[in-house]
Every structure is written in structure tokens, then in C-alpha cells.
Image (cartoon, rainbow, N blue to C red; front, side, top):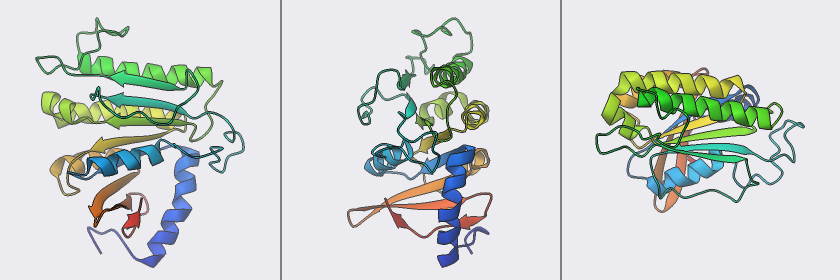
Length: 230
């Protein structure tokens, strides 16, 4: 047993049973793995629901409807996902200023003295706007990606970023959405251990012999899958 997480064949079945509940009830996932940028991008597409066809998540109310996505990033060159109908994708960029502060100059929160708080408010307001535009989001209809909080961790420290992520993950689950946060660090890094309690699962990524792989750790079930192909 690894860190008191059970593994083996039975856990794969438990994992497959848990996935529908994560979509139905709302969930947040921490995606980790260092020096595997390309693997993070593939995992992000999957978690954002790209290429789902009719978007059937086992919920009739979402079948055939457009996925709503919020992409929060400090990367101006971040790859975009599949083309989507107007109004269904929102980008929130927070490229740090020269002093390391996240810039929110183009938002209604530009006057907020605490720029980290302003970023959190903008994310929550965006989720609320999409919920209103959809006349109530169906389970798993909203996907939120945060890629990556590393500049914020360096500028503000883990405690304040923990509070920001606590606020945003709660907002995602409130509308039964699915959020994920990219952390390009090793699974054993102390920052991963600090942030992990905010998430329903931790997804560890790696590349082996040209293949992209993922391993899920489900916190509530205390189970860990084997390495699975992405």
C-alpha cells in the first residue's frame, strides 16, 4: 500500500464507478507531474471535455449542449482547445507585472488593492455569468482549468494561494462543474501535499517510452489506480 492508498485490480473498478459521481456532483482535480508539459496539455484537453462528441456525461440534460469552459492562465502562448460557440469559452489571463503582481487591469476589479483577491473575484464572477447564460449549468457542463498557480505561489506563498483555490474550487462545485489545476511538480513535493486536501483527486502524469500515462488517487475512496494510458 502506497501512503495508505489501496491499489490493484479492484481499485480500477472503483475508479470507473467513481468517475460518473465526479461528473454528476461536481469535482476538482489536482494535476501534477514535472517536466512533462506535453502530457499536461493532453490531460487538459480530456479534463476540459474536448472531443467529447455530443458531450454525453450520462446526464440527459447536458447531451447536445455546448460545453462551457473557463481557462485561467499566466501563459499568453497557451494552446487553445477545440473551436467553440461564441460565449462558451472565457479566458482569464493574469500575466504578472514587473513586481510579480498578477495583472487584472482590463477587469472590473482593477481597482482592488489586493490583486490576488481580484483574480479570485474575477473567476467567481465569470462562473456566475456562465451559469446565468446557460440558465443553470447542468452537471459537468462547466469545465475550469487553472494553468498554473506557480507564479502566484512564488509571489504570495502557499497559504494565500491555498485560500484562493479554496474559494474557486467551492464556486466550481456549487454549479456541479469540473475544475482542474495544473501543478508542474513531482507528486512528492511539499506544495502538492499542502494543496491536495482541496481536491477530490490527484492525477499524476508521466511519459514512458513515448507514451503518455496517468495515475489517479481518489482521496475519499483512499484508492490509487495503476498507470493508465492517456
